[in-house]
Image (cartoon, rainbow, N blue to C red; front, side, top):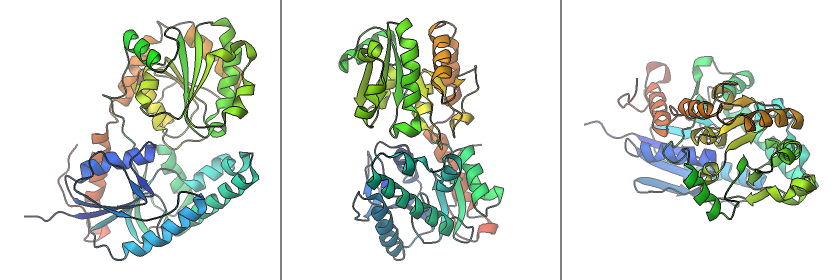
Length: 397
């Protein structure tokens, strides 16, 4: 009888609301059926933690640069005393030699693409310094860790991230693979008109009308300015139109940008649990982000049957075919307004687009994600990687 392999997964946090945390939870919940799993993290929130050994690394939440450094040192030391067959890290966060690392965010690629806007756009000088220091640490860790002699294989969450990794670090194409996030298709689904009305009443929103949804934090990066600009131009001609902003951000800085004539139809809901409800009660999703690695939120919007208007960012460009199952937009209020009007004026024509959008994302299940991950674990057992690995049967073609 073959003994179960010992797999160690390292991450800052496992489980919870974020896309990376959700990815880890979904993979771990499946992996524990096939292997002995140890999680090394600052926190772990699993729906069912049974069968998972958790080693907590005690670190403070803020400031982020200090958290990163303390975690890197303490987790690196702790890993020296953990027996394992395979070490799977989540990004460049420890100095130990790893077999696999899943990269949800390539800092080198982000800085190249955006000029590091996070550290430049903060209104607070202290926050700018904090962000710049965190970025410098992350870039340094990537240069140290992302080398074949240190981390044998990289997993990118999208084609865009894979391109960034190959451009920034000394890996061969076969050493960087793509494993996309999954979407819970039973959770994120189109709602009937009655279900929409029920959800709107539950959240204290107008029962009737059409809702444009913007969801996410880091509003400068995600492009809320452009959404508000487009809404200001569009909403006066559509009295049934509402803008719903879900996510954490500086409401006081953005509220003055809303035109007085339409201000009553813009709702800042804040950060909320159960994102499927907010997708379910909405009609359109606008996402003019300047940079994404996968953008799980866009995939969930597509699964919920919303018409998606998005910039060409990581993950989304693997999903959307312009005019077929969504539309490309620019970070330009006038261009977004024109596209928004075209969708609002032809609701019947976009019914088929909603169906195509959901159909396109339906292949990206969490079972599919885990199947790809298992195949990579198996590949680590092949001769070019030495004798260690995850020698289990292949679970999908």
